Length: 569
Image 1 (cartoon, rainbow, N blue to C red):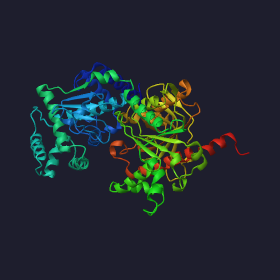
Image 2 (image 1 turned 135 degrees about the vertical axis):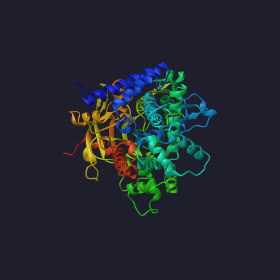
Image 3 (image 1 turned 90 degrees about the horizontal axis):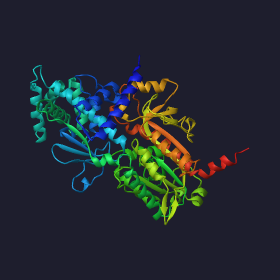
Image 4 (image 1 turned 90 degrees about the vertical axis):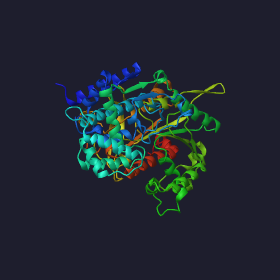
């Protein structure tokens, strides 16, 4: 008899195969035969992030908010959703950009939403999973809105009036409205009240009243008037799948910048991280020392993370731009911000005491630090694959002088809590044989004694964070895998790195690798999934612990190399 973990693994594979088939076909109806197969597989998988997805009556409110924060505002009103590549719509349509999953979306008319997919297959799997969940919950709302004869309940008709009033800006009695929603969502009054407030606090999504009505309305129209909802994949998107068009444009712009600014010959240190921690670690002390009562990088970062402290953030950024930092605008559509730091331009005396460096190394070797925002799923392979490819300069083949690669990311943890640190020893790609053991220059000892739990071991690379399943994760934790966490990019990054280092020789075979993650969630703990809320300021400490450790290793590079060659006897 198959275990739950085996059943869940099979469900992941069915989802993966079904989605690839639907993309190749070009379109499908979510409530048609193909759509029902995807829904069935998702229900069998029963991802933690989607909570009560299998309850036939209770609508999953936390999961719904999580999904709508990553979908374009107003998508619940659209009968047709077209997934496209970058095809020129930005010239004539105003893009809608979801803040939690940046992508250009276009509401071309009242029935259609066009959504740009520029991050590869992972981007498509991600949105299809979210849309499938949305349609499952929409069916629950439709059924809850009807009585045993199929007629609409009084609560539904009243909700329609409330949504019209809300649209006109008229005041509504929210307490009474929550009672109607309670019936339609199959949840308690207090559940609905709390969820509605969470929705109202995010300006990027419509209200829970609006979303509930439109989800139920389109589901009703499909059931009664045969106005089928449909998801369509543009021909250009299907043609460009796997072609790395976006990654090639992104990497090309970076290489041109390095050539134009005479940085190409310098030793290059690559870090994939958020676009603020490296800048703040290098420049906040010099920019704000004397303006703040603290000299701790972590405490400065906490102040800079407060939304109202925009002037402080501008001060740090302007100081950085005057002292060796460059920002590159990404016009490729990949949404990967890039910062380049000419470390020769940094005065070691302006650095925080927490940053240690070899001044001779900085002045003689003149290293360059390349920081790229974190990629999304398979986009990690595309970006590094294109970045490390050789290129022509005045008729000669050139390569980047890559000295080290650091990956600083957030991931789900299987033991411990939000904010704890994971140090991987290998990346295991779930459902495949693509497993990548590697030598990590960072270790558990680098982070112990800092007030956080630290775990060292293999990390699981999953198809999507929205496909986290308790049984599969429990298996990876308790079996001989002894995995410490899960994320979406590690195996893709390492695939690009190892293919280049060991096969194509586009980067040195002995390039130094530094991987470390901090925990954004624990999907094995009740209330610990991504849909339970963001990490907030709790992420500051682990982020800057990892950033400072990486920077110190880079800026002490020459000393480290000497120790490796001439150990003290």
